[in-house]
Amino acid sequence: MRQDFRCDCPITSALDVLGDKWMLVIVKQMLIEGKETFKHFTESDEAIATNILSAKLKLLEEAAIITKNKLPDNKKTNIYLLTDKGLALTPIIVELAHWSDHHLRDIHSSMVSGETMKLLRQDKSAFVDMLKKNYREKLSSFGI
Image 1 (cartoon, rainbow, N blue to C red):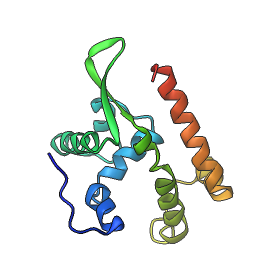
Image 2 (cartoon, rainbow, N blue to C red; image 1 turned 135 degrees about the vertical axis):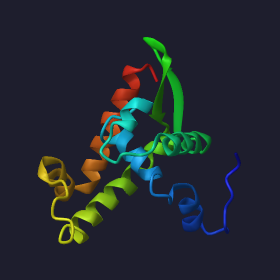
Image 3 (cartoon, rainbow, N blue to C red; image 1 turned 90 degrees about the horizontal axis):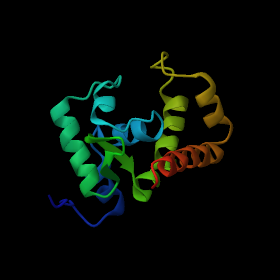
Image 4 (tube, one colour; image 1 turned 90 degrees about the vertical axis):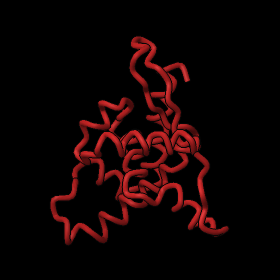
């Protein structure tokens, strides 16, 4: 399936790929929550429907944001991993979390807090680097 773009604007083009309500959620789940199998995604708090999840994973794969492989010890199960292109979304996800923490907490008081948000508030750049480092270590454990 070839991606259709509405215009030549880089922001609009990015939104054409990532602007739906599930795409960055899936990337966030992979990056921060360690989700990597279809079952893991279906068990998440966001409760994405399986048909939508399948479609979104396929689109992310076609855009080379994720790859689909087989688990080394279970050839029946697919494992989804972020590519370098997907990992490059880390600063955007962290910036969204930072913005949300500062601008939505007053209307969403039950939003997660704790040590993770404390680290993000102290140094966004270091937080981005930590997430990327942790994910790359995970990839190397799969031999990637």
